[in-house]
Length: 219
Length: 219
Image 1 (cartoon, rainbow over the protein chains, first blue to last red):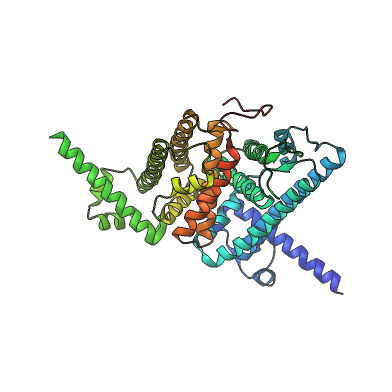
Image 2 (cartoon, one colour; image 1 turned 30 degrees about the horizontal axis):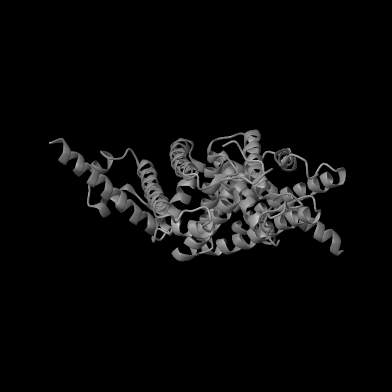
C-alpha cells in the first residue's frame, strides 16, 4: 500500500504549502507561525513536522514551488510558440516576452514571498546557504530554457547562456520588487516585469547569422 | 552669527549619521534605537529630533549620503579618465568599469543598508514613498553621468539613457545583495559588482559611429 500513503503525504504537503501561502499573504513571513499554518490547513503540528523540518524549510519549499510553476508555464509557452512558428527570428522580442510571461496570474504574492525570503537570507547564514542552493537550481532551469532557444537556431546571444540567465533573473526580480514598493497592482506589476525583461532580451539577442566582422561569443 | 550655527548644526547631523552607521553595522536597522544612536554620538534625544523627524528619516538620509558619496567618486573618476584620455573608444569596457567603481572602500555596510532600507520600503507604505523619491534622485544622478559620457562622443548606447541607468542600477544592486547573502568579503563583493556592471556596459555600448546597416536607437 505504498502508493496511497505517498499520495496522502503529497496531499498533506500540498495543503500545508497552500495554507502557508494564505497565512503569508495576511501576516508576512515573520508573522506566519507554524500554529497558524497548521490551523489553516486543518492539521496538527505533528503532521507539519513529519513533512517539514522547520518553518524556514516550508517557506523555501513554497518559494521553490511558486518559481517552478512559473518556469513550467514559461517553458510550455515557449514550446508552443516554437511549434506554432510564433517564435521566429523576425518576431518582435518585446511582444514575445510579454506573451511568454503572461501567466494570467497575480504575481504580487510571489514577489513579496521572494523578497521576504531574500531578506531572511541576508540576515541568517544557515538560511542563506539553503537559499543560494535553491536559487542555483532556479537559474539552471532558466539556463535550460535559454539554451533550448539558442539550440533552435532562431536566435543567437551576445553573451554566454549563464550570463544571460543571471542578467534576466536579476532584472526581473529587481523590477518586480520596485513595482511592489510602488504599490502596483497585479496587472501593472506584470507589465513592468515584462518590459524590464524585454529591454534586456533586446540587448542580449544577436541575429542568428552574425554580420561579417561582428564578434560572436563562443556560447 | 548665522554661519557658525549652521556649521554646528551640520556637524551635529554628520555625527548623528556617523553614529547611526556604526550602530546599524552592529545591530541592523530594526535594532538601532534612537537612544543607542544618540548615546554613540554623545547627543541628547532633543538634538536628534531637532535634526531628524524620525529614525526612518535618519536612515533614508544615511542611505542618500552613502549613495551620493559613491556617485561623487564615480563622477570624479570618470572626469579624470576623460581628461587623461583613459576613457577612449578603444579602451576595454570591463577594465574601465573596474577602475571607475574601485572606491577603495568596503561596500558591505552600504549594501546591507540599501537592502534593509528596501525591505522596510516593501513593508511600510509611507516609507516606500520616501524611498521611491530618493531612488528617483539617485537614478537621475546616474542618468546625468551616462549622459555626460554619451555627450563626450566617445561611446553611443544601444538603449536610451534612462533605460541604461535603470538596468545598471538594478544589476548592481541585485548582484551586490546576492554577494552579501553568499557571505563575500569587501573585495569579492567589489569584484562581483564590477563584473555585473561590466557585462551590462558591454551590452549597452554601441560604437560611436554605427556600422552601415546597423539600427541605432534614437537616444
